[in-house]
Length: 339
Image (cartoon, rainbow, N blue to C red; front, side, top):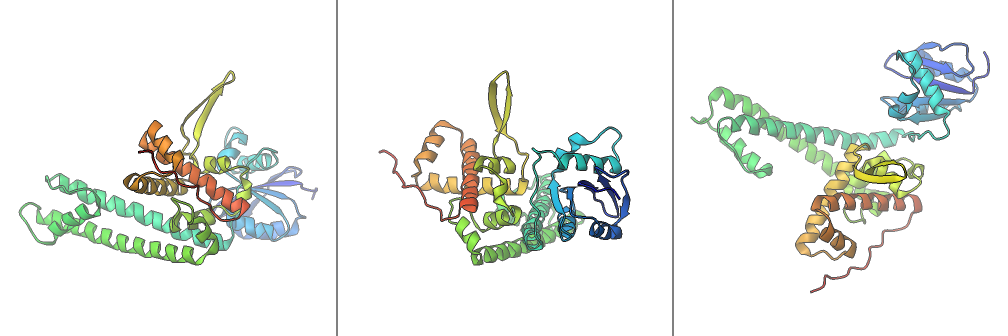
């Protein structure tokens, strides 16, 4: 076998395709053959798309001395030639991993993936709970039965389902009772996971350091630590904010640049948590009086939601600085508003 300096591996559930730059062909491997194949090869650079099970295979292949690099699938797509198939995907991965300006994804450990599974499960439960609540509200609204927004209004609707009534046909009431019970089960499970995340964050020194930042609670701190195994992959805090999707789209030509709305192309869960944290903090500040001069000046010039996203972006940059440079968060001196 010729010496192989670079390999592209297209992973799947059962069939894997390998492409080496100095190899005469691209062998096709079954799942059970992948580890044996790389165990026999001398140490080389292996590229993999950062998709399902990619972190697992990166850890397995890395045990044999190979340098494994994970890449976002969107960045690999540009190197795929026409008539896409698994073999061409492996070739594109091999081509992309050698590019000097390629951006890579840090390989997560088993512990980090285990930690991340908890907020991921909670996020799924929240979406299912919201879907059940919306379905229940929507079907009752067809009968002219509505209630206020929020959990309190929803529970008012559920109480109306407990006893038979002329307003709600019995056939429909029995079906909606199933939705109500499902909502309650999802709500209990979500609260249990939230308590688990909170306990784990309070027991972790690194998470406690992040929670000293305004807008950052146990949920944000634990999610950041699980999703960002190596914060030094980002050169600046702005790069970290862009990875989350909190920076504006940059459009420019002829030397003229225009920054538009936020890209929303990054990590959706982390972006949602940061914006929700900023929203809660901003509401608290408006009720008690804004003491931060930066925040007060921004509220005077810009719409409320723009300020909310700007605060979330600022929080992300502070988190990056704490993760990369260490130390403790030091709040700026508050300046009371002029009378």
